[in-house]
Image (cartoon, rainbow, N blue to C red; front, side, top):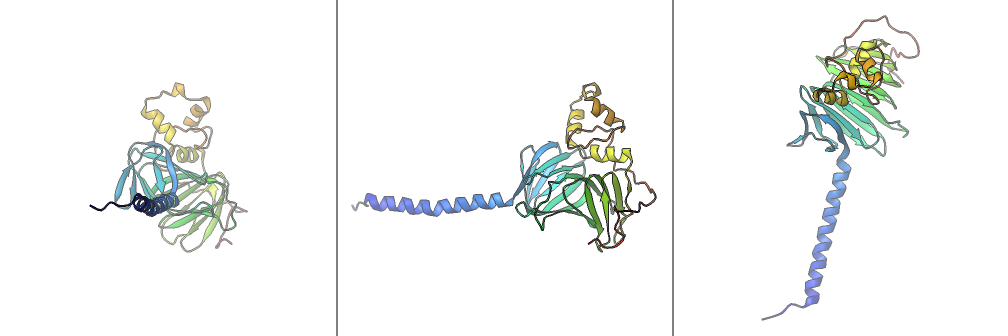
Length: 274
């Protein structure tokens, strides 16, 4: 009976390892390239659709480029992107990360329906962008805090801080500053002239996408246990960004649209913005 040389056996093991290790490293590199962030906080009934997989949303679950994030009737999710941006997704919403390149600061998302609030990391790259698209318009931002809803073919923008370039699909834009709002009321309609957002609208926009407040309410946390600022925000007297201090509301309906007189000034573009 022939015996194989130990050196031949050792050589075979080394060759097999040399084939296996690069494949594993390649798989790890591909997974790292697909990652966009993770679920940092959530309320039940959140689902992540990845290809043909339905993945239950849980805290610290990875969110990849191309994932579809769906929230149900009582679901909320906070997505911490790897570039430092934070996305709060309201209930009954669906959005997808369609482009994500943190090194070039190229981020694009599609909001199919529902509402979301974004606190965007400051963009420093020359061609950097952060855009949210709906079937009727697009909001492009540079380092700001804003709320978007898309319901019944109507897209509404409320800006908490910074400035947002708000355009319909034909390229007609307005620039909306902090404390202001604008609405695109259907296909091919231009955005409304920016107008002041009421305290109630600001409070509803924050509370409608916040996960901490809902989690506290779900646990039966009494109002007496809330901070003084949170109690004041409960009645809409003080507006505090939901990313910093939780807001509590008794409902999650979309903000009521008001028809204030147009504001004319530096915050408005009446044609395509440069």
